Length: 136
Image 1 (cartoon, rainbow, N blue to C red):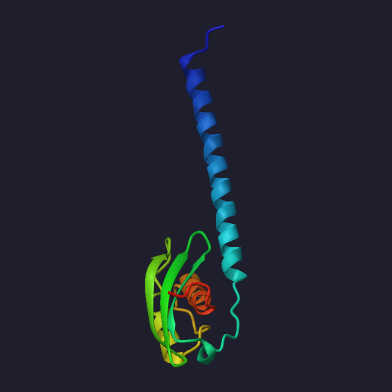
Image 2: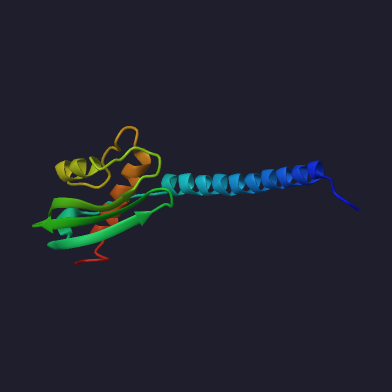
């Protein structure tokens, strides 16, 4: 049985369409998982005045958004936050949230408008750093 060129092209088109649907479904699931991870992110009531002097490194990753920070604490005060890496996908950057943390000396500050998810990820990276897991 000989297949016509038209029939082969139709088969290839249908196959490509199905592959595209599979990729779209995987992407949409990943996107839903990312949104849930951001939504489920919580912050502890970390008392910065009890954090020993030092430089701490922390990170937080929710797949589409990632941040790694270096936080310096002197005499119970955050004196510097350096963003070592920030992957914010298609969203706006939220690096200014570190200025808010420094000003207010607390982690759960207001998010940057238009960059809520990145703000949450950066804040959680700061909290993870100050929990002392990766002191330099």
